[in-house]
Amino acid sequence: MKTDIDRKPHHHGRLRDEVIALAMEEARAGAIELLSMRDVSRRLGVSPAAIYRHFPDRDEILRAVARAGFDLLAERFEAVVPFGSTAPDAVAALDRFQALALAYVRFASDHYGLWRLMFGPYGRDPNATHLTRPSTYDWLGKSLAELQNFGVIVRATAEDQYFVWTAIHGLSDLQSSPAKIQTALESAVRSHALKTLKALGEPSSDVVVSISSR
Image (cartoon, rainbow, N blue to C red; front, side, top):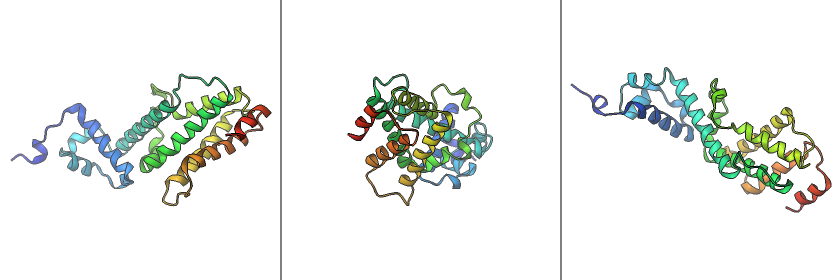
């Protein structure tokens, strides 16, 4: 006798996408830790064996979800600062940096559970070297290089890049967690971004005027 699971048709190629979509919804809801392979098969109406044909274990599902999350974050970055574009001047370079910071914090706020998964153990993807798009870290490095080029900051080393990332990442966590800081998000991010840049060295006097007047 056939069961509902047996009778429900699933295109072979679509099932993998459906598994990732389901797991992403659980991640967004902060319930990913409760998700099991059996839960996935039951909710999609397929046998556990069908899931295992695409994912050898639960960890591989979570890694796939983290990869999809980074793709979504890259889309956010591309929408505000196309990777192939360049800043024409210092003010534009500063605007672009702040736009990226704001996009990052907003992404964390919109998808907090997914964001935490992405920057946990499952986000350390051994296949990351095969990405066909720039990484989010690439966007930050390019933005800091522009700022250095126009004299907004005096250096942009790998250590500086890591410092800036952790500063914005920390703000994202504070703004998105249940203990979030009750401030206007955009103004908080812009202020924090400027203070972070100033920690990398005093910009030239003409740029100080531009920054202070904003």
